[in-house]
Image 1: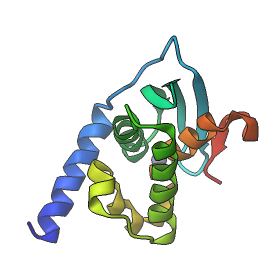
Image 2: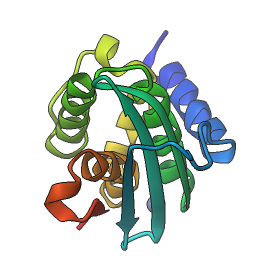
Image 3: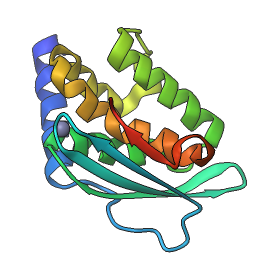
Image 4: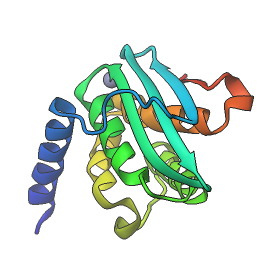
Length: 152
Ligand code: ZN
């Protein structure tokens, strides 16, 4: 597969998740909550996690915003479900470095999240892609900032 085909595949994945986000809604038995806001674009998210025995057993979000922010939240919830919290934290750090610092992360670690790497070419949209992850980080660390994240 050449780069152009891959780009097209990634775009389709983002469009699909942007239009029909997975794992939306509330989680009545959630153990962690986070709220995120990207003032640059107006994206808003609330994230609910259920953590059992050190593992994220469920994740759901509600919000509104651009297709990239919704697709990113949708892909994120899929990639963190059933993962140990430690690995979720590691993925947050890696994804953030990937999107903001240009660090490379192996494709097998990223999985479908690789679709979002194309967003790096549009610096104003990077915050749309990282909002869900900042919100996740805030939800896992409520002691730090009232579980509120802004991308600024
Ligand atoms: Zn946005």
